Length: 256
Image (cartoon, rainbow, N blue to C red; front, top):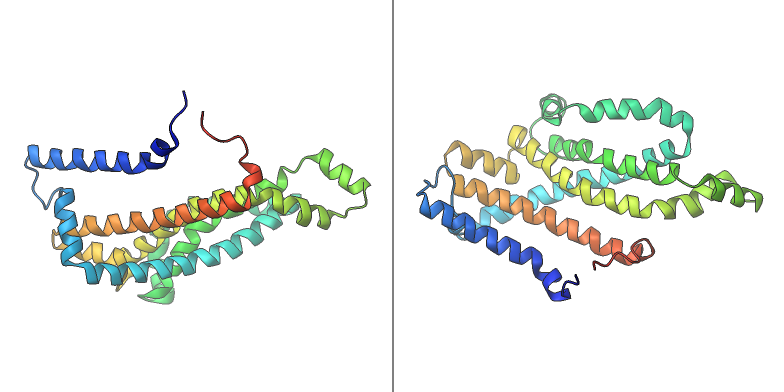
């Protein structure tokens, strides 16, 4: 069954609108108090009333997240290249990275506060620590799954191991890389907000923590919506870049 292009394009907004209408009806029909579960209209009113503080907090959270995310890209690509290109590095480092990734980052934030104090440091580092692992794994996977037959043919043609990795392995890893970016950016926002709620003095996480302590749930939900909107925007940006730089990996992917 073929789906209209217009329906496919607007389907996320249609689903969102339906969810908001259902949400509003549930709150109104069951008379749920605002301090327990606010309605979409109540959250929208908070956006209007606190537009300035929300924008200021969102900008702080955004650039802290981007800073930590940029570090995670650099470290993740370097580690992924090392692990994917060397069996020894894979054996030595990968189990340790899995163990570290399993550590709850909420338990790491207090340690970062002791080391770096309240403010910028814990947010950047938490965003980095929570988001570099997917990038590393996907780059390593793209390199490690290079077909042995293809590598043998290139070796026969005179290519060195380094040439194979750089000219064939890395381009082949790009779809994995962009896939990891779309996952990692959402995790980076989670890390920043977590640090701001635990040890921040500004940002969306700090605003939500303050609003929650004052039982202003509409404002806290407005912060959640802001975080979700920023993460969705960055996700769509990476999807747009991916389609235009790795179109060869998406041929025949159109829905029937």
